[in-house]
Length: 219
Image (cartoon, rainbow, N blue to C red; front, side):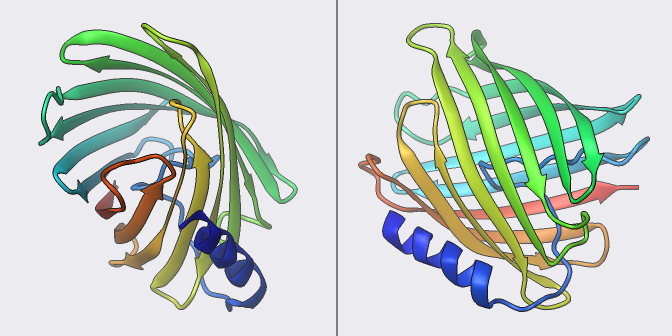
């Protein structure tokens, strides 16, 4: 499965044609952008992997140039408690064909504090509206119990047409597992989009998962 993700990266980077790419949710790899000043957004997704199901709502708003976000996830699986997180993200540099940001978050599971994480997303592209954007993440995850781990990943957004974007990513998660996703994004006007993604992790006994995401910019 991961071999096919790598092939997709090479194919997308070399062959796909131009359009208008857009950053956004339903992905594990973050970009180095934040909500527009004075605006809010809602990112949401349904992730299905037999027999599990995850439903997440993640609103965020800009406050004085910093994106403040929260999320709530419900899980339909044995012994799976609801999870919440709070995060703050700020752009550190955005010029000369690249941008970098820093985000800090804390998580709760079943009403108990579950740890914190730090992430540094880097986006490479001539500008935010480039037809091809690369996203690179380096981070640190410190659970309440257990060993802290570094996290890393790389993602690609490549426009296929005016309203269609190909998405692909590879990452190492906080548990030391390798995973990836690939799929498509369909723009629904200037403020909304739908994502459809197929993902898998190297050591996940449940096998592949399917994600349906909905993203909405509130203007």
